[in-house]
Length: 323
Image 1: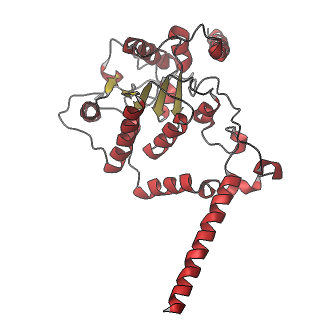
Image 2: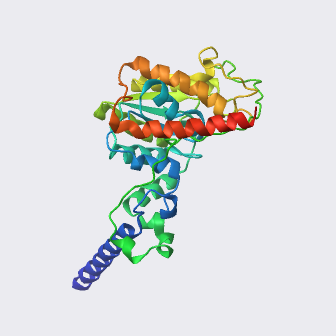
Image 3: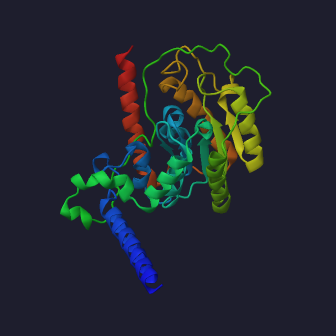
């Protein structure tokens, strides 16, 4: 019996020591900056880490539909509201929730907008568990970073210096027409949302309620990704969670997408012209909520004007080049 207890205690001690070492290794390897060279993935989305504390009014979450369709600088230009696109390619909800809580460490958004495309994206439970492990033990995610670590990095205070001038939006100039046959045809059926996905959605919804943020579901225009079955399910989900729902796929007058010119990849995503229409409606919607105020005259937000000027110059130069 004594031998058994002794071996058990040794096993516990070894396991505890191993966990301590892994935690220490994770602290050493965790990126000290949000720059790409510091191994921060999806650097555009992680740009929110460099935004001054408490300055983001609206948080946009989701996959590539978000960063292709929503331009925070246009919302700033027309309304003086600040917003950020924490979106990434093929984003799953386990990654969405990471961005959400990461943003909440320094920001207090009044409105949280979830694009609905990734709500229906399946992922195995193992991916979710591995992501949870990455959050608890960052060494599992950044284990290869030891090759780039310098001695001075170990004791360097975290400092996120990379400011993303376009606030997560990505400018796409190409146009590739879409086939709209069958797009948004009537259906009485509902699309399926997995229990795992529902878990993440409910966590975000509960957090929004606790923090006094308005939750909004947004379906951006997409002939490839959207249909009435998905629409029907999100209508019910929004009702269950007391959230607003904007489905631009049914708003032909309010968001007049030209499927010959406004998509960059045959209806999958918006290009610049489509994003201008999507963003124009979103700005109007945000204004009508009555929850936001303009920061245009506040010197604290002067960096937004500089970012807007840079973006406008880039777009003007591009448009002149194709005339």
